[in-house]
Image (cartoon, rainbow over the protein chains, first blue to last red):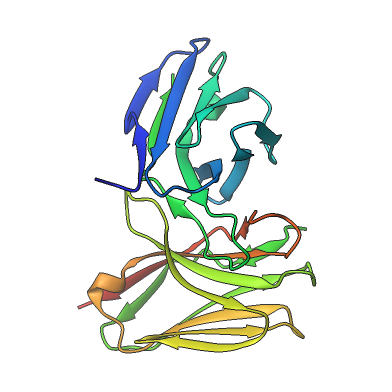
Length: 114
Length: 112
């Protein structure tokens, strides 16, 4: 099984609909992140969480919300989807140790808003 | 100005060539430097990371950091078709709690 699992892998939704993307991890990492990836813009941070009680906005949080249900679960919601939220969404995790070892990414959710 | 700049390519080379991928950055506080490889329809995977300046080698891959020039490079020797992917640089300061700033990625194709 993958260390970081994202569901669904692909989703098409209509403008105005609420949608939730889910992420679960078996890495035992404290820190979890949601990024979106767009051509020419790269990876941009939406929200991040350093533990269950800690939620922080990233660079582009408007129109999104998150929930950290447990250490291993971090979900991203689009309250009212709009077409410019069409993108590839990645969940990532990292540990909180002194030595930085980078992120472990999930395989992504391709979201299309029509 | 973006904190991290990376030429998007695309870059196309013949098998066996030496590939050079580069990023520049503006924040002199960056201390950790990483390279990720992303295959089509997959999430990025960590390829190499270095701390501060210097070189690091791992098999066919060499990462270089020049903090005085705010410039990092990834070299791939004896490139293989399996190296065809998008390569993203990422960097972080010590005080941002593992938040990384990513380049936009360079698309590489190695032609057999």
